[in-house]
Length: 74
Image (cartoon, rainbow, N blue to C red; front, side, top):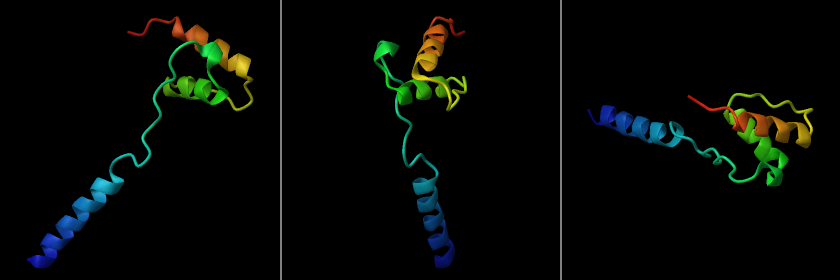
C-alpha cells in the first residue's frame, strides 16, 4: 500500500514538473512592426502558422507581418 502511494505521489510530481511548459512562450510583440527585431517578426509569423523562412530578409518579414495584420480574423 505504501509503495502504491509513493508511486502515485512521484507520478504526480513528475507530471507537475514535466507536464507544463518549463519555458513559457514569449508574448506577441506589440506596437509598430517597423521597430521589431528580426526574431520578433519571425515569432509573430510563426505564431500564426505563416511559416517564416530562414532566408527571408528583415524587410520581407516586416512586409509579411504588415500584410497579415490587415487581414481580419474570424
